[in-house]
Image (cartoon, rainbow, N blue to C red; front, side):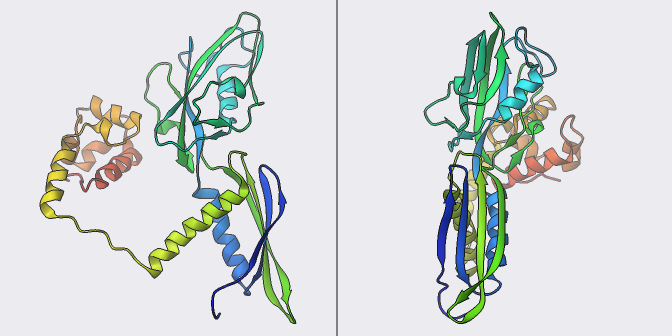
Amino acid sequence: MAGEPIFDIKEEEKKKDYSRFVISPLEQGYGNTLGNSLRRVLLTSLSGAAIVSARISNVKHQFTSLKGMHEDVVEFLLNLKKIKVAYSGDDVAKGEISITGPKEVKASDIKVPPTVKIANPDLVVAYLNKGAKLEAKLEIASGVGYSPADERATGEVGFIPLDASFSPVIRVNFKVEETRVGRLTNFDKLVLEIWTDGTVEPKETLMSSSKILMSYFNQIVNPKKPVKKDTEAVGSAMGVATKLSVEEIGLPTRVANALVRSGFETVDDLVKAKREALVKVRNLGEKSVKIVEAALGERGLSFEG
């Protein structure tokens, strides 16, 4: 294939949460090449936001009910998971509900900071009888992919972690058709459909996924080598890192708490430990130890044995 590829991208149909794009003419075979790669990145690699935990006044755990609320707590939490949130901050954002019935409680009743936008404000999350009171504090975080609730479990009474699906793209579909260029009929036309959760426009997700693919291909064409750091500086940095507490290296709260309870309070304690010993720590296991291992690796550290 000679020269730069030149083709048109038309947004033939556009809604708030849906667009159909037609990309053509493409050299034969490139319809499937682009369609497959874009679909995979759109569904798995774009960042989004979600409600990740809740604290409900007078509720100690999720398997209970709140006086005067039609839904039990599990139903209420499931409704919270349906709320679509736009937020891109690095820190956890706070949301709050404080409502007295009678009231049909909607997503719009959640008080959030200006950096957070609720995309489906009309979603009903609970029904309250007269005099019933619902008070809850919510945590909103940004992320990529899917994060199960047990990654944030702490065992703390009243803290209820939620499963979180961060991806703003709900569904992607594509098909490849033949198209004509002059007398030639062996060109591809890629029809790409994108459905989002309403927090971002489909065209924006198409641009973002394309940039992600470009960054990977660019590393093949123009590879960047890791910068070698001065040995003395690295040693000094490692010394500082080992003095950090386990809560300061980005571990899930549940993992950090389990380590502290077992006597591993600092990074220095971890690097001196044997991997086999950590696997046996109560409430850890192999998966959690891999998380700890990755956190140490980011700082150029590892277990002693």
